[in-house]
Amino acid sequence: MRITRAEERWFDIPGDPDGGRLKIRHLLPGERAEVWEKAFPQGVQYRPDDKGKMSPEFSMQPDRRYDREETAKRAVADWEKFFDAEGQPLECTPENIVRAVNEIEGFTLLVNTFREQLSEDIAKEREDQEKNLSNSQNG
Image (tube, rainbow, N blue to C red):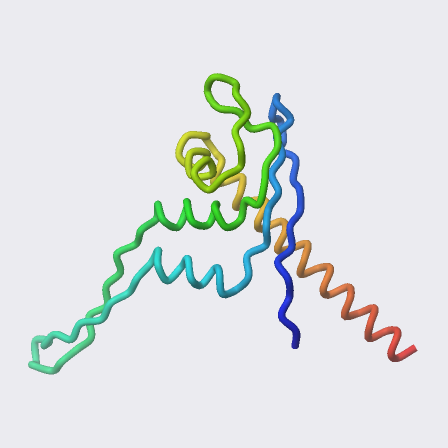
């Protein structure tokens, strides 16, 4: 097995009058797990039940804002043709990505849609590469 590099690809934003584009980075499994663990921390406490037996009680305090913002900061590698409310170009920085998450309607959904598409494309490409490798070894 090999460690793979994170892949990045450009996606045009459908219907955007400014012609904006996002460069989406495919998150590695450890990155996704790290965000998940911080966004959805779990706890266990043992409490006596009605028979006096100690039973686990699970809890979770989700931080959905952290999940949205941190996922976007890790997934958005760059952008083109993004502007602030005054029409000034908006540089792709972690701070501006958070602004986009919180101030642009549908931004998070768009990032997640592109992430899913990229994941599907990468999985299909790897599957095709494996088939080609198998065919070349057998043929």
